Structure formats: structure tokens, C-alpha cells
Length: 82
Image 1 (cartoon, rainbow, N blue to C red):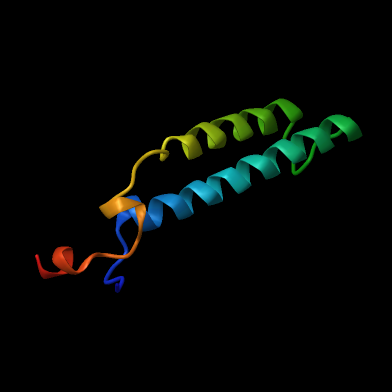
Image 2 (image 1 turned 120 degrees about the vertical axis):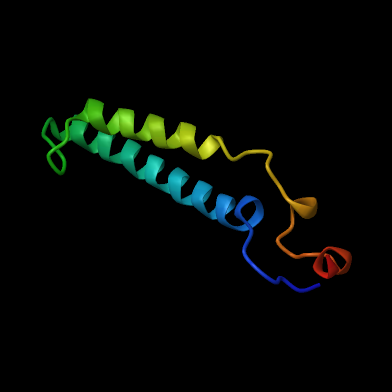
């Protein structure tokens, strides 16, 4: 099977979900660092880092369960001919 083009649901959405999960995890770690140091990290307070982690985590979860053509990025032969 051949992959002919990038589809939103099967190609871009999982990549975006992984980037948002990584950003949420980094934000949570920076919140912990900010609390531990009792100082601002990159000019943001710990509560701002926690909110950033929460919002990015919720946005990352929004893409769950959406797959096109069987959950694979490869297109079947019959779909290519359409």
C-alpha cells in the first residue's frame, strides 16, 4: 500500500496530539520546578504553568478515536482509485 497524501484525521491529528502531550508534560515539569525553586520560571508563576499543562492536555485528548481508513495512514487501492 502507498500513502498518497497527508490527511488531517490520520496523519496530522496524531502528530499534533503528540506535540500537545509533550508540551503539556513539559509545562507540568516547569510548574514543579517553579514550586520547588519558589521562583518564576520564564516569567510565569506555577499556577500559570499548571493551567497551561491542563489546557494542552485537554486539547491533546480531543483527537482520540478519530481515524480515517482503518486507523492507518496508508490508503487502500480501492480508495486511491476514487
